[in-house]
Every structure is written in C-alpha cells, then in structure tokens.
Image (cartoon, rainbow, N blue to C red; front, side, top):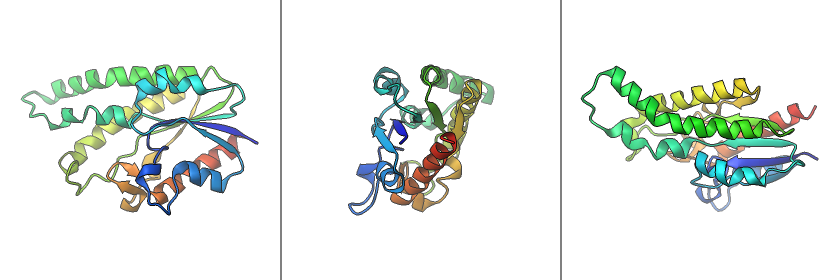
Length: 206
C-alpha cells in the first residue's frame, strides 16, 4: 500500500467549502483508492507555512508527496492588481517581479527539501479560479491570470530543475462547476483533482 502525504492549502483541504453530502479532495481519494493518505494541507496555508511547519511531517515511509501551494501567497498580494499605477509597463513588471521573488524563493526551498526524500513528488500549479462575474474579483480576473502565469512558470522551471512532475490544475478546473466559490474547489472539481492524483500515484508505483 502506498503512503501519500498531502501538503499545501485549501486546494486539498476544501472540506468546509463543499456541501454536507459532498466530498472533499481527501474523501474522494479515500473513496477511489486503497492507498493511505495523510493530509497536512491546511486551508489558508502559504509557502511560509509549508516551509516552516508542513515539511516536518514527511517521513521516510511516505512513498509519494503531493504539493499544492502558492495561491494564498498570491491572494495576499492581490492589492497589487488594484493599484492605479502611473508607471510604464516595464516598471510595473519590475514591481511584479520584486513582489513574486520571495514567494518563488520559498517555493524553491520547499521543492529542494522534497527532492531530498526518496518519495516521488508531484507539484501542482495554481489554477485561475472562477473569477469572472464575482463581486470581489471580476475587475481583476484578467490581470490575475497574468500573475498566476508568472508563478506557474516558476513552478515548471523549479520542477524541471529537480526532475519532479508538475500537474497542471488549469487543465482540470476548467468550468464554474469545478469551483465551490470563486477560489475554492467544489465536490466535482475535487473529484477530478483526486483522480489525477491517483493516476499519478499509480504511474509512479509501477
């Protein structure tokens, strides 16, 4: 039996966002697979939390590690997209880089730690959310995609550097029904996510 540890935020820890008769990502995994899953992922977590708390739970007996983190780091900096800049695009992009650098550095340190274990690791990109039409995020839905793409590019580069597989969540969460609200996975989205995790675990276990 594989032992899979789940690190990250509410993309995995979405229980409070699904209905009373619906399943979280963890519950889908446990329903669809005979493997053992340990969820350390916590709603609201950031790269800082993973780096300083969640990594401590990894043990040598864990055969697979799933990491889905970064969305809250971006959300905590969402005010950047609401500023009325009087600068050139060049300066705006420089500011974006400066804002993103510590997040990317945290992420790379996390992945460097994961690479030190014998367990297979899976990195998940940040999805785009169901922002269009929402009261809170509609006005920044397009610029948010740009910020997300910047961070996801870093995930791919870091994953490639450490020879770690990357799961593209933007290809999984593609419809409004995949979201319980503008930024959290629904029962259906969580089920799709769980199936992709299981597929990866089975592939890595061959």
